[in-house]
Each structure stands twice: as structure tokens, then as C-alpha cells.
Amino acid sequence: MKVAAAVLLVLVGLVCVDANQKCSGNPLSYNGKRCASTTWYADYHKGACGCGPDNNDNQFDWNHSKFVAAASQHLFDPGLKTWCGAQCGKCVKLTTTGGFVDGQGSHVAEGQSHVFMITNLCPNEWPNLSWCSQSSQSGYKNHYGYSEHFDLEDGAGQVAAIGWKGKNPEVTWEYVNCDQAHSADSRTPGTRTEYSQCFCSKHPDGGK
Image (cartoon, rainbow, N blue to C red):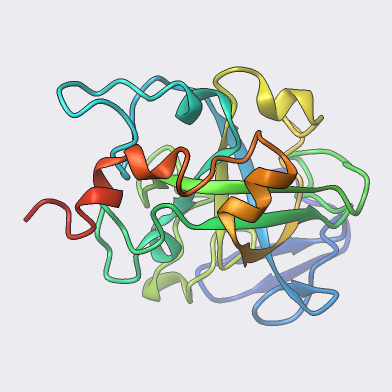
């Protein structure tokens, strides 16, 4: 990893916090709100919340083209479930801080907010180990110091359209009501209109 000249090394899982990150403290926060790192991905799998047809692994169209995210394992489910985690269907408002991880992203203007629904898991395994490795062994931080990470679905270019793709902006995050967010911006899935179709909405215990 290319590291800026001013670097703070936190010797808990060798966490690196560099000069371009605006968040500080433990856990990392900005303007009184918890911070998270972000990346993007694109695939056609229904994901760990079952947001696709029951008879195959395809996505519902909205789970490919709207604002949805895969959450890091410890956030997705503190009990480490990998299917129908506790946060399936929850919505998070992500707001850019203007910061980023040096060598892993670039500047996005501060104050841009979008609401994403959690429909998938970013597992603590390769190739996600730098971002989604929050665990007791790492002090519940990833390699860059963040306690939470959101991998944003860009299947239809929705992350590129807001200027975040590849820039991996540092964000603050907070839970918000999905249906209210959907009413304000239809790119955010609603609980009643979209998430109710998902397997984990109908079977939050995972179908056991």
C-alpha cells in the first residue's frame, strides 16, 4: 500500500490511518458520526439476503441496479451468520467526508449523501481482507482503521453515476428508514416495495 508521509500506525492488527482520511478517534468518527470505508462491486448473484428468485442465484433487477450494499461481516451479523444476517434489509445513509485512503481512492467532495440498503455480505476472506476483516483479532477494525465497510453494488453503473466508483470515498454512516428514503429517491429500495420480495424478509431465521 502506498502510504502518505504522515502516518499513524496503530498496533492492533497493523492498522494504518493516513493523512487523507478525515475521520479520527476510536472508533473513527467525523462530525460526531461513525465512519466507514467504501468500495464497489458488480455481479449477478442474489446475495446473502436472498434478494432474487428462490429457484436460482440470480438477482432481482432492483438488487442489481439500485442503491444496495454488502456490509462487512461484523456489521452484517455480529453472530457471524453468512446468510440472512441481522442487518439484511436495513438502510444506511452514507455521507462523504471528503477523505479517502491514500493509494486506494481519491477525493470526492464532502457532504454528498445517498441511502443504500444492505442486501449482501462482504465476507472476511480473500480478496476482501484489507476492507472487510473486522474481527476480535483485528480489534474490530479493517486494515485502514474502519470498524465498518460497505461494498456498493454498481451493476447498472449507479455508483459511477454519482461519481463514487473507483474513488472509494470515506463516509459517515447512520441507519435511516428505507421507505422514507425510497420516497425521497427511488434509487433507494423500499422495505415494502422491494425488500419484502427477498427470502430473508420472509424467513429472517434463514429458513431453518
